[in-house]
Image (tube, rainbow, N blue to C red; front, top):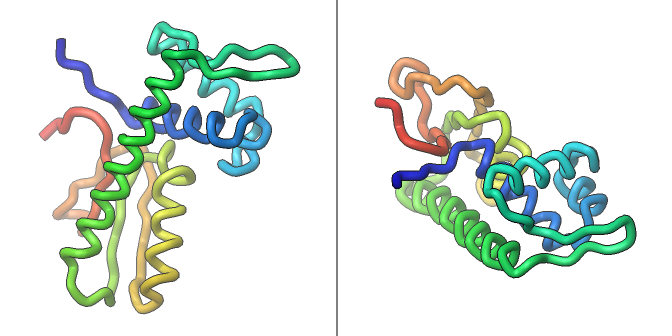
Length: 156
């Protein structure tokens, strides 16, 4: 069985990591700049898609399940791999100056792209970074995209 993860699932896993690390949906929502309802909805949808319960929750407490621990650890590796991709691209560029155009899906803009771009901008103030956010994949050559963040199986 060939399973792939799409950008929505990647985003939901990022939200799940924030919930676990913050210890509550309210604090995760604050850190991610989302409403508590949106965070809760992402968790419900992730659990539905995976067919497992990741967190046991009541109105007063929340506890991660054994399966949730495994998913959390795997999601951390996924995030680390994403950071490695961005670091490798940065290291390969040599002198850090000029303009870089990044394209990525809307769901990852706040959780993955914006924090990474902020760190790069702080470290390299001479670098101009333009971000094109949308769920329609741009033509990398025609649209002059330097870095495209995509999740799932490439179409072409």
